[in-house]
Image 1 (cartoon, rainbow, N blue to C red):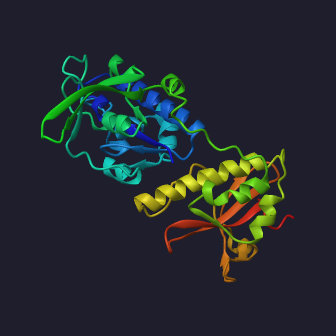
Image 2 (cartoon, rainbow, N blue to C red; image 1 turned 90 degrees about the vertical axis):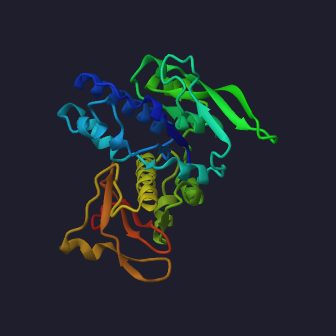
Image 3 (cartoon, rainbow, N blue to C red; image 1 turned 90 degrees about the horizontal axis):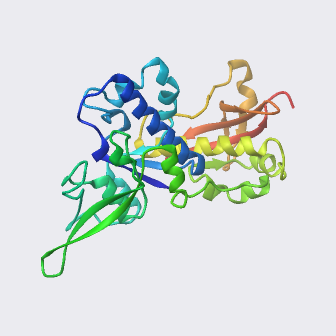
Length: 314
């Protein structure tokens, strides 16, 4: 899963006009969308939650995203996977804690001079991408110079100048396309079924779905929308698993079945137990539906029970 590190040094403390703060929010969301287009299962790591980011000294992201002309950005941000604090990413990427290691903005830099830079430092350390706000032209640069300080075996501080990959806009993301792992290409339902565990580690499929999925050959009109919905479901359930929220935040509409239609959703799971797969997401064409249930044991995941036409119509 692609890890992106938010550059906390670009969070702004000085005040600005509300419209400027809105533009910073829109640029941030544009950059995140560009990442998602290439790697839908990316994760943002930062020093605080997205809502707590200071777009300026007088406007937080949480305050601005409620404006009517930021409604699209607000809805999208609810689907973004974020993991805080940085330490969780360090563990997942099998790196050591930053002991005897420090990254700082150089003392002669035009912005943030001499300050510690954790997000940028992690981006360099793991050879990943840092994502900055457009709060200053300095943060638009594709590479940000850092002073890396380490202790050698004799306990002496050694310094070297390094560069962290950085982006603040959609164009910046395009510049670093080689860093972002592109989404896998699925050419048939057979391939999707064979690779389901790798593609969707937080989804499980009951036996009846195999024929439904493998029945979509290359070029089938439902293959792409089914794959897109399953990727979205995987992302939402993965975030639910990590963040331990009450419910997942889906990137699409999810509905339950009416009482009169509930019986149509009864299917046997992998152990032969009958379950009701009432929650569902729609896809087109063919009045498509993906039915699933959320389970908490042995870990949080979704069990998919139907991938096909609306139940009851053939």
